[in-house]
Amino acid sequence: MTRLIVAAGGGGDAVAAAMLDAALYSAGPDHETVILTYAWDRLLIDPVPGPRGPDNFTGLEQITPAVWAVPAKARPIAPAGSTLPRLAAELPHTFALIDPHHGVEGVTRQLEELVVHLEPTSIDLLDVGGDILARGDEPTLQSPLADALTLAACCQVNAPIRLLVAGPGLDGELPLDDLHGMLGPLVHTFTTTDVEPVASVLEWHPSEATGMLAATARGVRGTCEVRDAGFPVALAAEGPTVHEVDLDEALNRNRLARAIQATVSLDEVEACCREVCGSSEIDYEREKAARLKDQPAGKLDPGTVLAQLAEFEDEARSRGVTHTTFRHITEALNLHGSQRGDLRQLLIGRSPEQYTAPLWRIA
Image 1: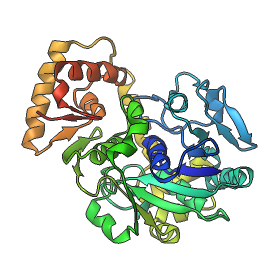
Image 2 (image 1 turned 60 degrees about the vertical axis):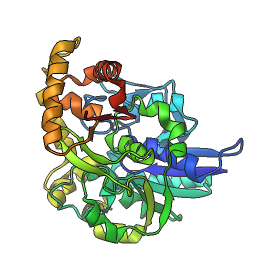
Image 3 (image 1 turned 120 degrees about the vertical axis):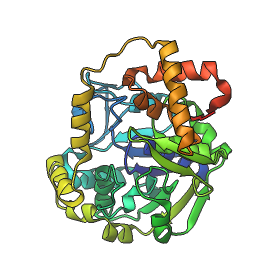
Image 4 (image 1 turned 180 degrees about the vertical axis):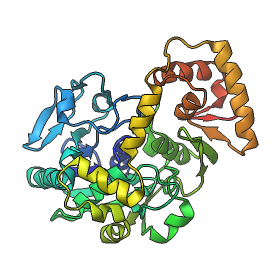
């Protein structure tokens, strides 16, 4: 018995897909789940802007002519980075690589080949946060491209695909109030038990949205500040929920997904994204990577970091913030991305009571 879960935006959506698999489907010796996902990590992990393709890895394993799996032995070719090999090492799933470099036509071909090869019992398209339901003109929208591309491809596949939105509003891109009218039936509410299969992954994976999804499943409530810009996200009762959404309605709403349906290259997809949404998130990554190019790395100075943290926490409290992510602290303190792990170790070692896994609680 094989399940196929498409992680709509890559990154943390792949971890959420593993949570979903454990929560909804019975694991066993005859149970296999393939998670089709982008190799597209934030610059903290991968300093090269945009998504990675098969040519950016060594050690991939071919599943079909157009689809490659990323096993634990795979390695991204420097200077690129990727969380996928470590995910494959720590989780029992097969992680297959979405290659967006041939546009929607290419991703559709990948899906069609997987459907024929796997004959999956079910196919789920999973998005954490709900930005897959964006029109494209929302002022808070930050990363529409990946979700729109997978949505457009899934709508062209001749197979039943269920669209699921987990943690509505948790990506900080679409307000929860805007999503309420679009969410369909409640499929599941994640619990602490559902988080356990990915608990070790959440200790190192940088995804903020999936981190908040896990935190709300564990009962954490409040306001979490995320991303480099410090968006406030409500950690509320809706946080750990998973809703079904009509796939055709999502496509009708998502202007970018409709605009890119005939694309055959990532450049075409980017051009449409700039036209429909006013910008491309890959352009943003290019600009940010250029700014960070000469940012110094090296060892942390604990005294300096703790003094900066105290000032950051004072200001965060004044904004009503109760929690934040280590990624956001790294950015707010203007630290190098490679220092995130050392920062995390320093803070948890000093004040373990403030660690509300995987978030940092503002004291």
